[in-house]
Image (cartoon, rainbow, N blue to C red; front, side, top):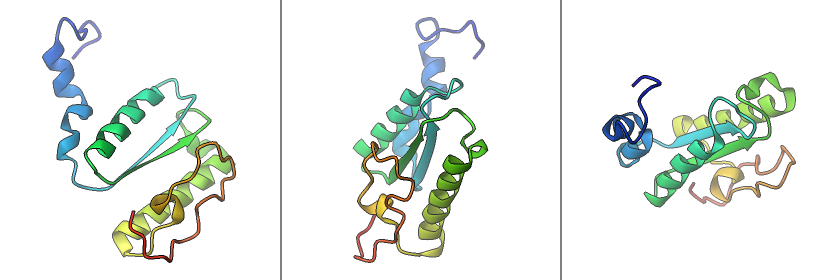
Length: 126
């Protein structure tokens, strides 16, 4: 699909190239990460996918940060994102207990990067 193709002139092309229409086929847990100020990919696209997967009762989480497209370039944000990614993969690939941010969630208004990092020893599943 080129830049001249618009949804109303090629709706099938948009459907075929949109991952939202294939959300029901996702079979693995998904961790999305996004910066609110990303000018390349709008935050609403992550929210659409997140919402679709939640409605389908698929395991999905979203890490939302205040900065732009490359979160790893920012020390505090990059460290937090890397730690949460590691916890996600350790849970799903190594069978370690899930952290609280995966089992109970964290208030998005909480700007404390330590929130929910402790492992949930209650046996709760994500």
